[in-house]
Image: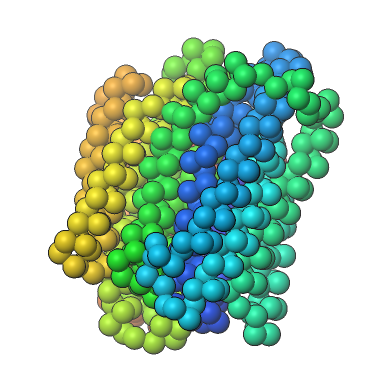
Length: 502
């Protein structure tokens, strides 16, 4: 639970900084250059396809070796993953050079912005190539459940990067500086994590003699199952920028990315909240403690819903007001703001259903039974891309069609198929799931939902203080009503102990 609190705390801070930077970057770069930044960043997000889920495998194999006090086994895991990532870094360098040459033929980019786009591809690609071998550091720390160190490295580099972005952009620097600072901060965070791996595990030794191809095969076999889900989620989050960049243009990429940003940040918080469940699920699964495992799954989903329901209601009901305050001045067109608010509402509903199942997915990852979840996410992603391409290329529809292409398959799969599969795997009835997770979450969230609806029609917020007041009051009401109507006495005692420890 302490790890979860640390992860969520860091994620909330990251989300707040990211919200600020979207508005800041849009104002200083303009919609077209901001669209190029989103497009290039989205392209290189797909670099996770190269690692075949190895981070997830390291996160699972390290605790197993640690439980057996097998330090030599941990070094095998570290060495094998390190040299594998080094090979992937060389591949990413080649991909970066190819993208540098052909990016203007792949996407609809204004001719005067092509040189900047090419250099940005080279900067981001080469920096991410340097990061690739260092990825194993965060996975190893996660295996040791040292999320405090992971969060320290990420948060310190995030704050430094934010300060430097503000300083340089206000002095007139542009798109390439943004690329250097973002990519450079990734290198810094990974180096900090690597230093702490040495302290947490002094016996660490990376050597070619410890490279184990059989171990690599086992890790990749496990990792591919995790990667299926991660790739599906990545496509759902980033492929929209690529599809829009191909058929519409960089300004539209920026508009859709702004509307999607709130959804992605909500996703980040929920996914971070669920991250610490995986090692606990592995431990309970190894002990064959199915009762506690199902209890953990029910509680995790309940807590996720207590965040999702009020947050989703806020974005749906007050999406237009939120966008006007956040980016209204930078965009300057009320028609575009209204369209973005519609897109935001559509995306929030569909993604909320997926996030409601994310903790269940993490439980299955800990048990090594998550392959079907991954396949369903891949199917979801393929349906999304197919529908979006057809809507834009064949019917020449606009951004709203991309939002519907995103949402309809997700409602079907995440709202219907995934819950049925999880209940089948864990031998949980539909009514048990409602009684243990959904009903108490709805009881705790309903007062905040009513508050947001009344506030919208009585005094719609038109400034940051007013928006913050809505969010603060809704959050306070959710915590109070959840404490009374959603938590059991045992849960209240646990939370009091956690707060006391902090």
